[in-house]
Image (cartoon, helix red, strand yellow):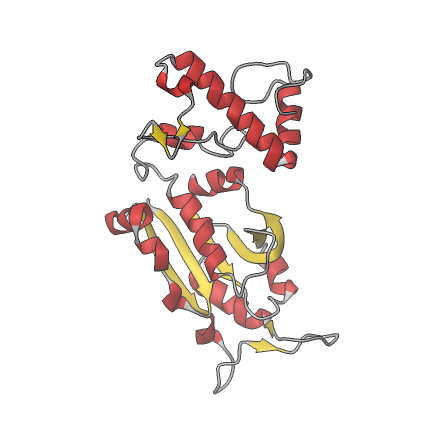
Length: 249
């Protein structure tokens, strides 16, 4: 059974968009995953297909009605698939979540607009509220594309080399090490000599050190979590003494 993605949106014409190209597009054409959209407007009320209303308590903007969104989600027929609401107030998207979803039957992604969605339907449908970044977007559609792209590339057969997913950022709790290719020298900048040495153990050690250094510098939250796992023996990779200061710390 292929991964089934349903998008609940006011703008179904935005899809598949970028997901129709490259790895995701090829996988879609080959049937590794399938995509359908439910137009929230089709479930709007009255002659004008109203989907929103003014917020109780006052305030600017409009809120998507719970009855309308509920009907649209029902039309998507979630079944056993998780229902995810894309919203800035959600929990941050993490690779562990992506791996869990990619291993399942698919997702129903609900794209908010305006000031958001009535909280009652979010709770009634047990939606997982997820945010893809600490910024406010115009709607959930681009965020939904981010979630799907992250999931689709992990589906069996989508990426050419399975080990690519094992070494990339977040796979072991660290950001990925830097990459280099030909030419060996460019604008006076040389490739680190260890990468030209042919010594696989030294290359692996250098990459590990680089991954730790960039994570420590750019994502102290990830580094702290990594250290906690290392101290409990759960961190990926060879054991090291992280209590001792390292270069750049």
